[in-house]
Length: 317
Ligand code: BMA
Image 1: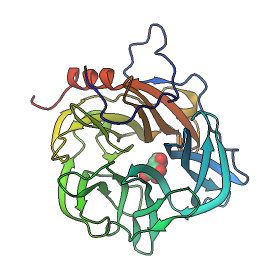
Image 2: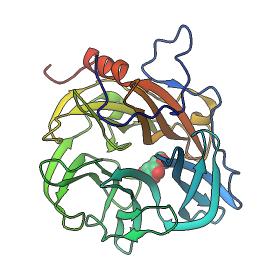
Image 3: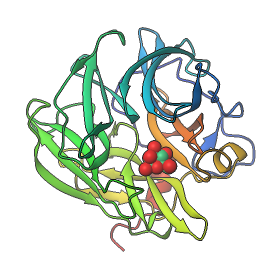
């Protein structure tokens, strides 16, 4: 049995695996949980981040408005499923991740600079005022994901160097920092090697600490004759040297199958940015964007995911 190392979250959003399903990850039957009309003048609300907050939940949501500018807005929820989003735009950019780290809530996201995208970092205690840090990396990069604690005395950040367009390549790297400002000791983590992710890979939700290592969901992209298809994969990395991959599934765990993943502004996209965990039961609730248009929710358990990764492990072959 694999175990999550972390806090209990008795009110984690949850549905049991549907009868007859053998999937490693199963979708919430009420998907999508947030549609494109949840904020005035929204074009779409999708790849978004969620954390537990004072017995309820807070989130930072990607909002593309009807001018097609990309912004982040906050939101609140009692149950993690029904959300009230705020109109106020807190930052320009996209694909937010939230990490509870050193007693504060850290946001990392794809921010714009004159020379291409970088990884913005900001911290908050109340989701109202934010302390902005220096951008973590030189442009151009996306998919900046902080770990929930220091490892070996340093903060850890996954990154994904790329180009200014719809990047046709991409490896996951990891950078380290003593203070969340100066980043170095860069390490390579993974390249695309599996068919379903052959074009590029990028980190997903905040890594989950387990007694087997860091459980990391990530996205991978295959190019078909109709363009990109985004799926979710998973790997387990070493607890003390998180750039070392111990296990990695050769197949996806979630891939577009439902209409809200097939149809939208960018068809055929599932893009995970957040995961809630309950250390007591091992339950995991994954938030992902559907077709660059809506927010959806899926479930698994740490035990089932670790078992699935090991049963489809490409490491050691
Ligand atoms: C990536 C990012 C994501 C988006 C995905 C599919 O490059 O822009 O926000 O979900 O493409 O369009």
